[in-house]
Image 1 (cartoon, rainbow, N blue to C red):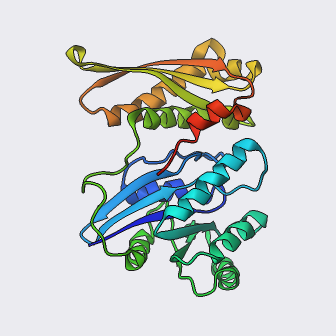
Image 2 (image 1 turned 180 degrees about the vertical axis):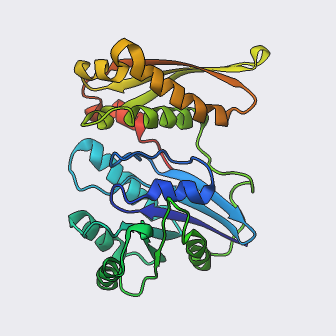
Length: 296
């Protein structure tokens, strides 16, 4: 029996969350076209006859000295310190830039196994693949390189074979049927944040954080009542989030309800969703401490 904690790392929008969701066959991490959607290290748990892999989906590596972005870098760095092996994901449709070079340099000094994964293989031609492999052969010599399409679930079985080959022997850390160990409030807040982010554009997605203020079970009614706040940075963003006649917030509530219902299959969720302004929350240490929770 094998068991390993696998850190999934890469620059923004390479498909880390999509891959973890595909492997675990459930929504573990939220996804969005907006870069840097993931803010915490999210555990996705995969178990089969070979053992158990605990995937830590980390925030996209982004070079910035801003307090908020630095917090996300620290999440990724801490995960690398605690893991048994690393899955380094690249989007080979984009040329390596400073962020890619920073990630590969950071991984080059690790003693633990690093497996490289070229995602979006359905979009790659032979020349692009060859160029990506050449870059990795110089940046991380001797590391295995595989090609997958996380969205189409192609090459994932081969990737799992490779990861299990590097996993140490050990007893499972979670029950066989576990898919994630996130607490309910965090899962619900992330679902709402995903729907809110995907309902707006421009700079607003990065201005959002969601806070669950109440979570109440009403057993006699077979309901779970949830009150959540979508927090924004500026008053001007509030009208956009709510939408004309409340249409956008209704759309967010409807989209979130479907995913929240999957968490409570035997209960009927009631979602009280509100929008408020919390200026400068990205520089408020108390707020950031709540958002960037301890992973281990």
